[in-house]
Amino acid sequence: MALVGKRCPSNPKGATMPSSARWESMTDVPLMVLAVATIPLLVVEANATAPWTTAAAIANWTIWACFATDLAVRTAQARGQWRRYLLTHWYDVAIVGVTVIPYLLPIRALRSMHAIRILRAARVIVYAVRVWHTAIRIWQGLIGRQMIVAMPVVVTAGATGIWFAESGTNSTLGNFGDALWWAMVTVTTVGYGDIAPVTAAGRVIAAALMVVGIALFGIVTANIASNLTQHSPPDQAT
Image (cartoon, rainbow, N blue to C red; front, side, top):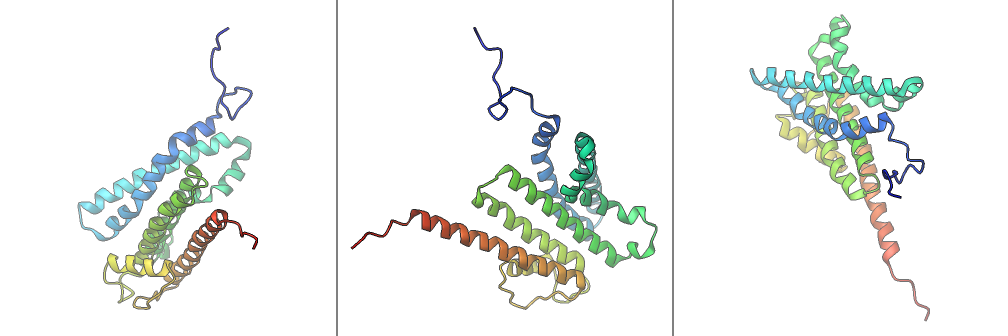
């Protein structure tokens, strides 16, 4: 007798994939691409001239709408566990919230140029966290691929964050290339000292980069040591 259909190997009862898992599988990669695209768009929006700033702002709000829709759908699918979902996916909540804070709270201090730069830096950081979590979920267990994703994201996020936090304040940051150089030497913990943060927000970003850099290179070192230990020939008795 012919079989009508095949059962999913991860589901012995042949049940269909939950709607939340289907939605996640469909949106993970597109949203990760949008999160990566947001980082240069924020730089363009903050530093370019019209009409590029207008185009970048429209693109950023469009991407924000995609993330807000995704968060609403996933929260609705969580149903009775929506509080737990929002806590475990705090970076999605932060992406939606940090963007609209200056427009929802009529506080003059939040609309100051320095506060806007800090909020832009925070947006870059939460988008980078979103990319990191999605990449790890997609390429789970492949340490080489994790590093390929992690290093450019961490360096770009750190450079953009320090640029928003200290451009116009730190005389050693002449352009965005200087910010990229600073992020690279900081995440590798080399720290030449030619560029140093002078604001509280910049120092927090620097501390985060150093901690992340130590963790990433520690993972690589441990992975290499583990592989060498597993493939080394056993000692022969004399």
